[in-house]
Length: 211
Ligand code: GAR
Image (cartoon, rainbow, N blue to C red; front, side, top):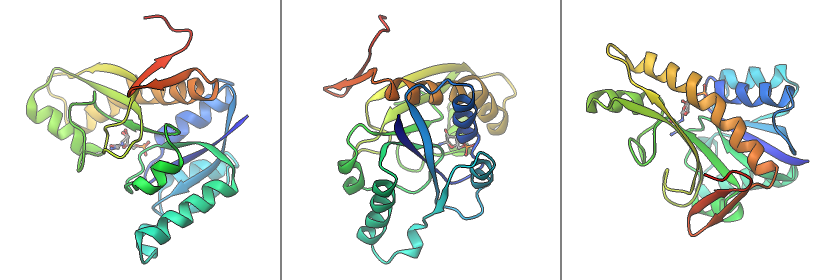
């Protein structure tokens, strides 16, 4: 069993999707052993506690330097022998130093079809606001590995979701979560834990899935 840490900052609906998938045996070969929040009042922490998963709060602003924060995060991950780090709505930027300790072992869920509406400043509702402003008819979600480029790592899974006339950022966010994010993230985590993901030259291949 691989040990999984989920990093959160907010409501934690993606964390909930992972917890539910784990309860119904859909995460094969891995278990969530730690939830780390950048925000002490994140509802995600309640979800973790209800599922009896240990929690920890780590705030960047409580550390003098990036190095101090990185050491605290890395120390925590090492103490739980974490093999996979999942960013599920985590708003603190992960430094190159941390990424280099977990190459292709940190994954992130992003609420658009990368490379659209991504990169620095694109998070949460902001992503959907920009998609609506641009008038795209299709958006979606992406799960990708994290590298040193913000939202630039190898793409694992994507799913398209239709934009509807009259959508607000909130209605679109909800549809993207329901139809794409909550399905993609547990699936990507399971594929990783089953050892079915390989990355070569920035391209992810899924074993046993011929396209
Ligand atoms: C999700 O929509 C996730 O894709 C997004 O934040 C939301 C967190 O919701 N992440 C980003 O925008 C990352 N750039 P949750 O706390 O309910 O899972």
